[in-house]
Amino acid sequence: MQRTHLTTRIRNGDLVVGCAHVIRDEALTEGLRSVEVDFLLVDMQHVAIGLESLQRLLVALQPSDVAVLVRVPTNDPIVIGQVLDVGATGIIVPMVNTAGHAICAVTAAMYPPAGTRSWGPRRVASFHGDPLDYARFANDNTAVIVQIETAEAVGNVDEILTSEGVTGVMIGPADLAISMGHMFDRDNPEVQSAIQHVFKRCQVHGVAGGIFTNDTERAQHWISMGATIVNCSSDATFVAEGFRRVAATLKTPARVG
Image (tube, rainbow, N blue to C red; front, side, top):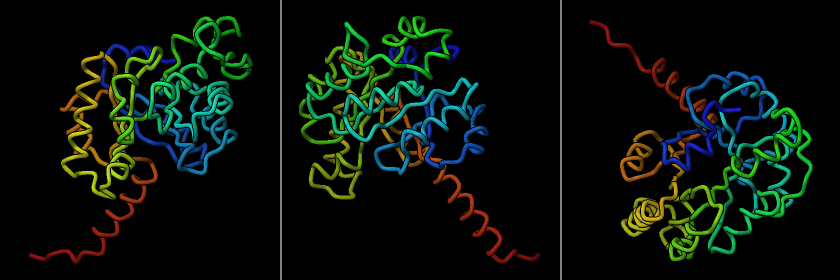
């Protein structure tokens, strides 16, 4: 268990920074136990990672203070329950366009009476001593983060942010740009304005606002604009960039004299 639980930090408005962990290799996961990030993001929506791969990753990561947020493939109660049962710290739910969508995600992640999550935390309960300890812990410490990534969601942002149980929101700039008619133009002024609007509404309602970024420069920009949950790039990107950097360095003729 994290010394200061990630969900508590998010609710307190602390800055939490993470990177996507998409390479399915337990040896790599074990090497990430001591990394100085607040969370690893496992993407089951856009990466070929299933429940068994997720469980192996979570086993390899223990013991560790690094939290794991899982972007589920869909806003489905069965999937959400399975992801939490194998030990995820929280979920990121894509394509949440309305308050109804947000409430559906929260309800699926919470045990009664706050929600409808089915009982069966066989693996995750072992982290807490026994199932009853986990039951007392789970509802207050499961992060439910919903994605705002369409023009419809931006229009409904106040209703989404005030949905009971939502821990925070993550903006998906790529899909937001597409939905606003600016394919592949995430820097379009209209898109940038929409993102800023979401962050401002997050501040008004006291809800953590986050964003997916591809590099540290862009991440720092959005942190300065109020983002408190930031996912910056992925391990696969870091590996590819490292290879390119080595190749560019060694294939460039050294200057003599």
